[in-house]
Image 1 (cartoon, rainbow, N blue to C red):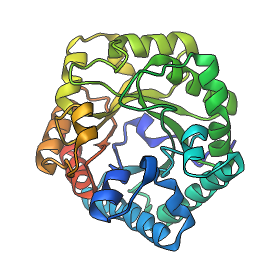
Image 2 (image 1 turned 45 degrees about the horizontal axis):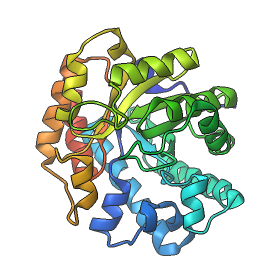
Image 3 (image 1 turned 60 degrees about the vertical axis):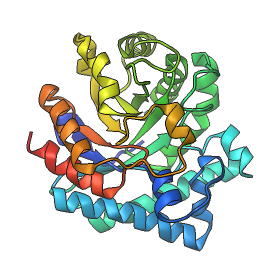
Amino acid sequence: MHHRHALPQLSGRLLVTDGGLETTLIFHHGFDLPHFAAFPLLDSADGRVALRRYYDSYGAAARRSGAGCILDTPTFRASPDWAAKVGYDAEGLRRIIRDSVSLLRGVRDAWETSDLQVVINGAIGPRGDGYSAVDVMDADIAEAFHAPQVRAYAEAGTDLVMAQTMTHAGEAIGIARAAAKAGMPAVISFTVETDGRLPDGSSLREAIGATEAATSSSPVHYLVNCAHPTHLAPALAEGGEWIRRLGGVRANPSPKSHAELNESTTLEDGDPDELAALLADMRRRHRHFTVMGGCCGSDHRHAEKIGLACRLV
């Protein structure tokens, strides 16, 4: 697989992620997204326009903040079980992944300069509910389940794949192994509850340690996503060498719990300045954090503020 360049975030370049794609489309643009799936929008003219507008807003935010950006394919739900619920089979999924990558290539062509790097991430969401660890998988089952997505991203030429909102180590290990076999750089992003622990009750240190041990440390690094910075604080307070393997955080602007956010009928977009200040403070304490951004509830306003605040650290 020929990747365009070494990942800039691994040489210390700050990259700001895009934010809450689904929450932006639902609350700002009025789209109904059954099962929280954004990828079917690739198959409608209106949907493609909305997706392009969403990604362009992050290109513009990056230009204003001076930070690079990492953009997710709109495929958090483009895995077999979720896709079947919205009428897509395995071939449909492969096509969706190809289409999503070509959409992001267009975005990259429009915004990338020698000073502003745009990294394309193949997003992989959990097989089950990202807020619950009721359904846990062992690594072998997870690898078999997620491998076709990973291979599709490799064929389409994303710069990396990222397992997001992982609730337990088993699924993360399976995705990391599938990526290693496909020759794809992989990032593993766990989510934590308000106490800093994963939904299955394990500590972040334990989950990263288990994944490291089972994959010969193959992920390029780890992230935490879909949690407020204050939720991550207790995990970071433990200290230890494992924090060196954490590459950053994609934070929710709201300090509400996953259960509360699930029930929310309004956009929990918090205060962009406050989120940026919290993340800059985290980067001040952990200078190796290079991937920073917002998650559910955040948009390009948060991304711009995060880029500005974290660049100054």
